Image (cartoon, rainbow, N blue to C red; front, side, top):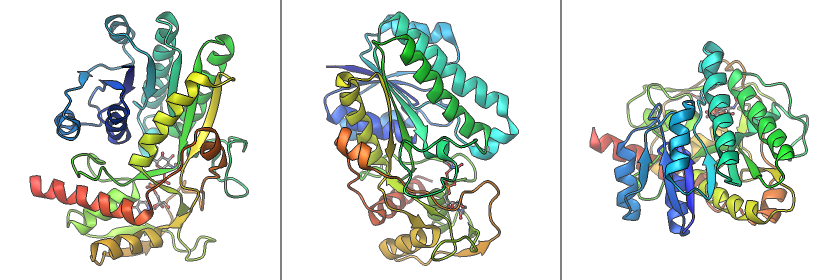
Length: 338
Ligand code: UD1
């Protein structure tokens, strides 16, 4: 059984990936410093899989402690999720973002070199494209100047990995550029757990429907889109989790040693379409209002998925209704606990 180090393995995408890795016969080793996650997720993972995973509460910026992981465990591959990811916060605290997101990556690459771990999957983002001049966006599009330090860390991390790959032909790395991950595991035992007021659309919708927030502000109704609201490519987190396994399998056999893939559905939906889907599957009428645009938002983006479909053999299977349904089941399970 192959051991896969999953950094940020108790977070939203990390925890769903741990479940799918387990189902596919891998042994995930979870590293997480609980900066934006809870240890309770480990118990939930056990409920879903019947397995107690190894969990290490370690900050990857600490080189010596991270080195200890590599010397204690046999590691066959790394999936690196752990990172700060709040766009607005990154503008307030750029140094924290650079230190954490770049520092942890550099430590992991150094240790992969020292311990001869050769398969590496990196969590990147469609934010690297900025607002592309035509759609859908494919992997050959240029990276436009980032709007935030967060976005810049994703661009720079991709470049660090690419440079490292050039210097070490035995190292195989893949960056996955996620579009907008949402939804939750069908068991409703794991999902997105935003601390404080959510920045992202779907947690804000579900919290509004649950009565935790009074009203959803829809940021901008005057964009150049059919209904005036922004368009994104929403992707179910379980589909996204499975893309990591396809990437791991591909990394082992690919001819080049670095590649990157879009991970989306290829379909764009507006904010109002997301709300309509939520209302349809839950029967709840959502309290929302169209307000001013949010600074820094791009108008529309969705993925060209040809490369990921053909080379990784991966395709999104779950639709927007399924994302809304599972996100709502997850939100309800939280309310019951409270
Ligand atoms: C942003 C980042 C993305 C990052 C992701 C993770 C950019 C361009 N994108 O995605 O890189 O990976 O966050 O956190 O920086 N909306 C509302 N009301 C709300 C919240 C959101 O109308 O209360 C709208 C937004 O204006 C946007 C859409 O919903 O049109 C999606 O927003 P959000 O979920 O925040 O994701 P992005 O901004 O696309």
